[in-house]
Length: 176
Image (tube, rainbow, N blue to C red):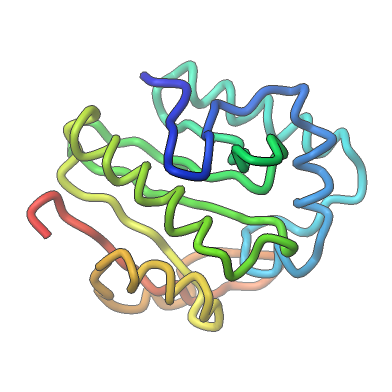
């Protein structure tokens, strides 16, 4: 599986433990983690543990997470990737986060488009899906911009931060 992707403005590369300081800065922001299934981090070791967990999943070809670097400043501005890979059913679930200082600049759309391109062309996926909390308006706008289809609401589908939450299911098919 590929470990790096390039777009016009971004360089995506597989996360490394050495990224923990930069990713901790992002994941410790309550505004960034508000709609993630993690609480904001309070210690850099949490970022190291997360990166290690994601690396183990990548080694088993079950997931892969990329650090998103803005090419011009060569700084990590977020992360994205396939939260789960199901090659038997040719599908994957994506996830993404962007540092608050970089919101509203189209970086999420650009990074996700590279995941779509790679997923459909190289991984031969048929379906790429995203689960989004109904109140996460910005993420929903990103998915709509990328022509994802809203499929419905998964009621009390996951436990997040101690309570059951609804999730909207969006998908994009190779034929879309």
